[in-house]
Amino acid sequence: MPLPGKSTSTYSVITLCFKESNAASYSSRSQTNYHHRHTAASTSTYTPLARSVLCTSSSISSLNFYVSSQLPPSSHLPPPARHLLELFSALKKKHGNKLGLKFPCYSIESVSEFYVRMIENHEQKLGLKFPWGHKRSKQDSGLNGAPKTARQRFLILLSVALVLFPTFGFQKDSTKMDTSMVANLNPGDGDKPIEIKVIRKWLSYGKKAECCYIFLDKSGDAIEACGCLGDKGYFDSIIKMDGCYSVSNYVCDNANTFFVTVPHKTKIKLARAAKFEEIRDDGFPVYYFNFLAYGQLGARLDNHKTLTNYIGRVENVYEVVRTQGNAILKLKLENLSGTMIETTFWDEAANSFDKEAIEALPSPVIVAITSMKVTQYLGNLQLTATPASYIYINPTIPEAAAMAAEFVERHNQNPVLKIQYQKSKDVEVEKKRNRFPLVDLLSQNPNRYAGAQFTCKASLVSIDASKGWFYKACHECRKKLQKKGNTLACEDHDQVAKPNDLFFITAHIADETAQAKIVFFDAAARMLFQTDCNTLIDHHGYTDPYTLPAPLTILIGQPKIIQFRFARLCRPGAKDFVADAVF
Image 1 (cartoon, rainbow, N blue to C red):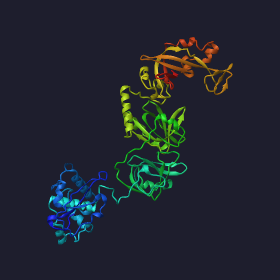
Image 2: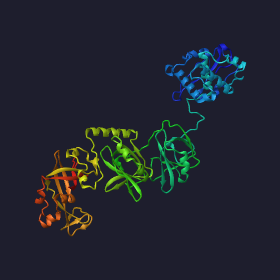
Image 3: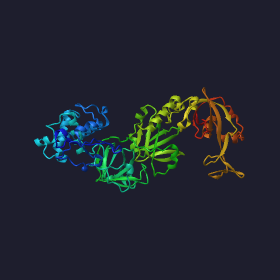
Image 4: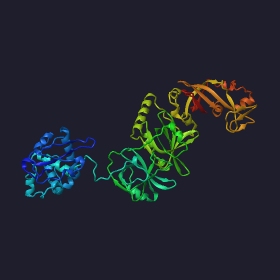
């Protein structure tokens, strides 16, 4: 700032401060014509980062600043001047309205008026003895009215800005309360605000009925927050989905040990004292996921302490089923290894899911699901929703983009078959459901089509009797009986007085495109041969399991419409089929 003295050697307080990481300062000192009648605020009162030095305007040129009547773009300036312009821009943006500035940011008038307004509002802090506008103050400052030259404007702007705001833009604003990061929260904390985005909310009806949320900070760390369900109306009025807030007056407690949604040792407890101040959505992530691979799901089977996030391609969306008033939605998802898994959603999620909209999207459709339980049905792993579960369609995350790209590449090389999973009550329709040539099926990954049934018109090429064409089974469970001394016994039901003879036919079929191995168990074999196994053995005397009966061999070469599926347990690299029906 200009100090009282002779106009030929006006003194100014000059400080250039940069971020602490740089710890750099530029200064120029001069002791010539030092005349000190009235000084500005002592440099010892400044913060260490903004320590000022006194220098004359005649030596300012040694700093090699470039200042013109119309300031150029900051990119054309040396670093010190560039920082000055950035500082002035920030100061004007923050205080312009308060000071009544009305000119463009870098105009001569704006710099001059900025100086005048600053002096008028802060002359005591600046150490001026006389009120601004008083004749004596103009004489003391060495100026007659507003500054005229570029050098005067530069000195005034720099000195006033740094005297009034010595750390503005270079250090944390001392007037702003420190905030905590979500990752650093521990039980018992809550004295510092947190800045978060609300990315999920749900109602929990466990041991304690609560309104629950997932808060996400700018670092991508998430924490669960809960409040009493009785305050739902209040929370709904102040907390909006996807809203960004500075949250204070909260309490931190130990995280739940059951149905854990995020891996954080702490949870936030909310009450009516909690304050939510809206902030800009600036730099907050959109999503939070902690995906588990299919191979890791087994460790969480029926262990619901920690809930699971999963990602996959939508293979099938089943029709919503209503059971005892509950809506049930099932999705079948495929991962990059081709493994399929069924997921189940209830009520609100099932009712709000738009099946037609999903099916209208271009393939592949990638789905991320959250807070799921790992369960099992008929030996297959499944994912079942909880109240905290969410479905995200094609989320803009790297995992989804990479998965989609991989599926597109695979589809270009080997198009995925469009499968109809729903059975038809009309036999004629069922005969044609998922009708594909064998060559197309043999080029597919069997894991991708778990549970899918296909049909084709094919002929028996051969029947392999090396492993027998029937086996003796338990009447209770139909498992193969094992020798136990002089009798046959079931591993589950011990000795069996009279075994049940059942078909087990290994054969090869062929259509016009390819040949494939297929197994006919008893039900499908009876449909194929139009007789049962006991009749062939007991009434026709075909008791040797390794010699094919004539009624079977005469079917070789005859075309049949066969319904079949991929075998669940195949030899490595093999693509075998299991027959379900013969039409």
